[in-house]
Every structure is written in C-alpha cells, then in structure tokens.
Image (tube, rainbow, N blue to C red; front, side):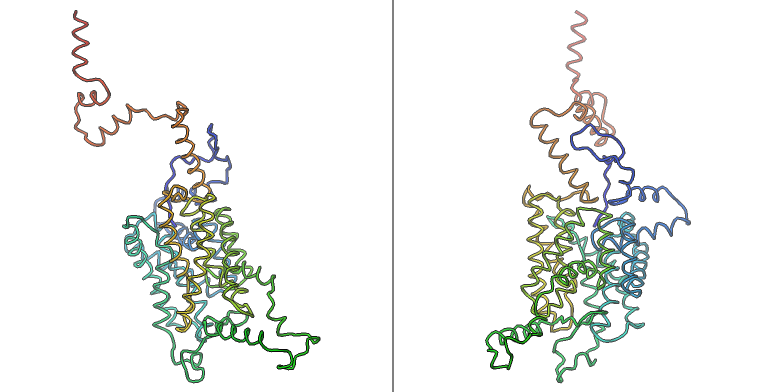
Amino acid sequence: MSESSASSYTPNKPSNRRFRIPSNPWLPYIGDCRALTKFLNSKKGVGWLIPKCLNALLRGVSQVVLANNPLAGLVILIALFWSDVFVGLAATVAATTAILTAVLMRQDPSSIEAGLTTYNAVLVGTVTSSLWTPLYGEAVGITVWTFIIIGAALSVFVTSAISTILSSLKIPLPALTLPFNVVTILIFICLMPMNHEHFQHNGNASEPVALRLRGHEPLVISSNLLHEHHLQHISRQIRSPEDDGVNDNEPASESSSEALNWGRILSGIVLSAGQVYGVNNELGSVLIYIGIMIYSPILFMMSVFGAILGTSTGLFFTEAPYTDIYNGIWGYNGLLSASSVGGFFIVLTCHSFFNAMVNVIFTVLIQQALSLALGSLHLPVFTFPFVLSTLLFLSVATSGNQLPRVQNITFPEMHRYNYRETRRVKREEKRGQLPIDELPEEKELVLTDVKVINEETTVAQVEVIAGDSPDDNDTKESQDAE
C-alpha cells in the first residue's frame, strides 16, 4: 500500500537486455497508473483540486485490496453502489472525510495521492454501514452516520501513528488495515445497543446473535451455535434409525441439507472479495475481482488462491448448514493474506508462494480463535486475522534471501521484473560479463560524491581522488625539464 518512484521504468523504450520490458501503450495506465499521477502533478491551480481529490479517493477505495489504481477504484466503487447504495455512499463520505483530514494535518502529499491515508477510512464506512443493521437490528441512523464520519477522520490519525511506530522498528512493517480494526471495534462497542431484543434470549444477554445478511440465510457469528451444531452432529451419529423413527428407505431431507453444495462453495469463493468491504453480492464481488485484475494479474491470481484456500480450510471449523462458507466469511481474510505476501510486499517466487499459502492457513486459524473470543461479545472478527498473521509472516520474510522484500512498491509485475534484473546484474558481475554500457563510471561517481559531501573541496583534493596526485605532477614536470 505504497507508491514509490521507478526512474528506470520506460515501458515504450526498447531494451537490449535479456528481460525486456513489454512495449505497450496501455502499460502506463495499468498497474499503479503512473501516467495519470505525472499528468496531475504537472497541473497547478484551484481548478485541478477536484480531479486530484477524485484520484486520491478512487485509489483509496482500491487500496483496500492492495490495488493502487484509480480505474480499479472506480470499478470497485461501482461494485459497492451496485451491492448496496448506502454502502457505496458510506465509502464515498468516509474517503472524502479522510482526504480533507489528511490535507488539514499536512500529511505527505504523495501518501494522500496514493490513497494511503484513505483506505482505512473506506473500510470504516463500508463495514459499519453494512453490518450494523444485520448485527443489531437497527437502521443506520444519524448517530451511526456521525460516528462513521468521526471514525473516518480518526482513522487518519491512527494510521499515521501506527505507521510511524511500525516503520521505526528494526524490520519496518506496514500498517495494513490495523487502524480500521482499532477504530471500527471502538465504534461498535461504544454504540452497541445492549438492551435491544437481539440480545435478549432467555433473559441472557450473552447468548449468540445471528447475523442476517441481505438476501441470504442467517449467519451466526458466535461460536456457541457452532458448538451446538457439532453436538447435534455427534448425536445423529450415535442414534440408530429406530430411536428417532427414521426409515433408511425414506428420503432424509435433513441429511441432504447437510451435504456440501459445491456450487455454493464456489459462490462463497467469489463472495470473499465482496466480504472484504462487508458486502454480500455476487456481481459486486466479480466487479471487485475485475478491479484487482486491472491493477495486477498476479495480485488477482493470488487473491483467488487465497480465497480458495481460506474457504477450504474453513470447512474444518464449520458444521452444517455451512452458511459461513457459502457467504465467503472464511475466504476474505485469506484473500488479503495471500496477495500481501505473494507478490505485493514480497516478490513472487516459488518460496514466497508457499509462504503465502501457509500465511492463509495461519490466518484461518487466527480467525477461528478470534471468532470464539469475539462471538460472545457480538462482534465480528473484521480483518484482525489478516493483520496479525501477515505482520508475522512479513517479519519472517526479511530473515532470508529466498523471500525478498520489496523496497519500492509499485505493482507485483514490476516487482518481479526488478528482482530478476537485479539478480541478472549481480550474476554477470560475478562472471565479469556485464556489458560495458551498464558499468558505472568510477571517476564520475567519485567526483560526484566529492561535490555532494563538501562543496569547498579544492581542485588538488579532487585530483587526488581521481587518481592524479600533486607528487605525480611534480615528477612529470621534472622529467619534462630534463
């Protein structure tokens, strides 16, 4: 979730190197869309503020899924409005609030342009507006909208603070969506209607709560009901057909309803993309995947693999009727974990791919543990599993050469290209076969360093550094006199 310069990136210039950069006129507009950034940076005046703010807003929307591209952000924003108009409106309001707050705080302009100060606010808006009514049975009123705006503004402060702390570590780490989790869980706890009838089950406020997503079956976020399903499953296994009056020759509708529906599992994999933003719509999720592909095919591939593995691993912790699986609840954290480690923050290699898949499995384990802890509090797990697991795996990645961390983040294809070029240059330097035009001019580099370090360096000192000492000059003059 960062934007860095790549001065050597010339997509339309032919290269005589082994690994060529493809010549494609559309290349500057995909990936991180550097052409639009350069165009907007060259424009001055008040009239260009709206296009610049729109660019930052759209990039912030797409940065949620690690895609730094305004076109991808536009497609994703359309997906949010298609899924739920109020969710799309909440994303727009929250992103605008974050941009204004970041400008007033005088945040780094490049971070604002790249959407790095916005994406956590986008999640605060979408997740709060989409989950509030299903969780607590209340409409999103003025109070909730007010806290969405306040939370969006606070997310800018929290993002700046957490980024400063994590970047100051011996191994610098990104903030990911940790600010969103901190702000949103505070909003949910502070505004939670504890006296609502949703919490009154047999007079006990700690009983499970059903999360009913729009147009879908009830989704239970508490682990107590999962445990109840498990006990029922065991009891059905130890009962004989005579005990419950069921004939083996009669169709068992209950057992058929407990069978896995592979079509709905595929639907759950698709819905994992929408669940990142808190929406549960298949067409909207497909559009989100399309937005990711516009930014990077590698990121799209890793996102799909992460959703598949996360959903598959979630089967071990889910009993019939598998509602969590079908709604993509077990896939969205895995989607983010796989794409973060497999190509975005770490160059995609065979080792990093394996590392990403292990990260997904570990993410699912954390999600199961947190669902047990937060379920009794009537709170979802948000993206805490993704954040905790990915921060750990990014720390592991820096200890070995097989998992190269990306220094200048652009997009996964460019990360891999730069990695292969760097390896090629080092390999040819060892063999002494580096082409002449790629060898640096040592004398020029030395003179440049002298000018930068000390502008008052005398000509004699420069000549000494360049290899011509005053003693040598005196010797030459004496020889000429003789």
